[in-house]
Length: 370
Ligand SMILES: [Zn+2]
Ligand SMILES: [Zn+2]
Image (cartoon, rainbow, N blue to C red; front, side, top):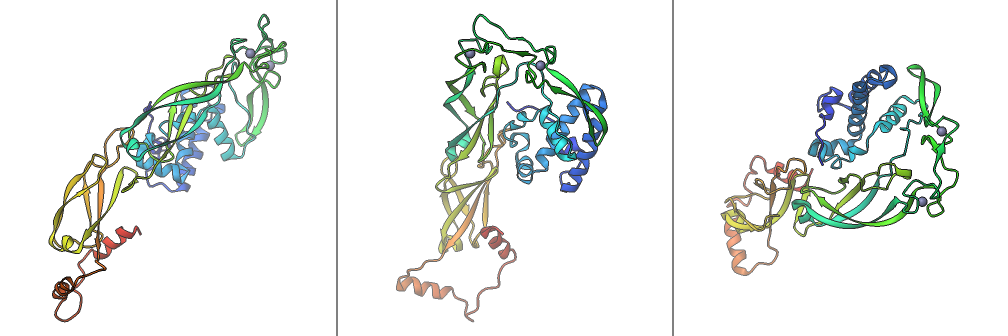
């Protein structure tokens, strides 16, 4: 599933700390340079045009950029980038430069639409990955007409408007000067043929609603709002066109004790005053089951212990993050006389607190998340 794509920053020729302005400048320059209207059908330029569009679309969106920085391409919706095609690249270009938004569509049967399915999985399932089966209602090829849209015994005929080419030429003005663009034929909507006697079951669409059961392997490491792409399981294309893709939009249920921050899992661990002062060996929950760890003597409130390799996996590489255990000293509220007496013994003779250790405020900041 994960395709190897070039790094988005590399595609735009900027470094990872690039500001929105720098991204914009880089995109403007490269999109102009590789625009297909300037490169006379050079396929490499076309690829580059699409590539810079996709890179800019992701990096110019702060939320998507953050996900990309944390997870790379895999975080980018496990290939929801697959939905970015040439049409998207042109749309983006037109949006960016305020162009007329010419419709560009391939001729011939149209591709079916992409479908989205919201899926909720457990915290643990998101860590280990899970196989799920879904009943999906979606448009499928009509059996009556075999998806052609024409009444059985009849066939589609050549479109007179475009002579079957499916496209017509238009001249338009743009920032780059006069450009000849090719647009889909309005009469046959780019299909090159029209149906005179539509199929009575699907009314000429070639599609009917159907239910299908689909098994999907949700990869280990997915997180909230990520998308898992299932190629070819979207809606069937009208009149024999290729199917779209199915996207699972993931929601992960909260865990009773653990919280996830990207690949890091955080556990807020309560310890007693005596454990903090004297040290102890304790057991903490992890996604791999209970783990033992050491509390150092003299532990301060909010101090953190890192359990290497106990975090969430990167869905692309499988490499796991760490678990961070934040130690929270719980101050007792009910004391026996004896405990009260013992605690008084702990108070310094002059009644003033011990000097605060260096780094104490850093722990507090970490603990309250500022
Ligand atoms: Zn036509
Ligand atoms: Zn039909």
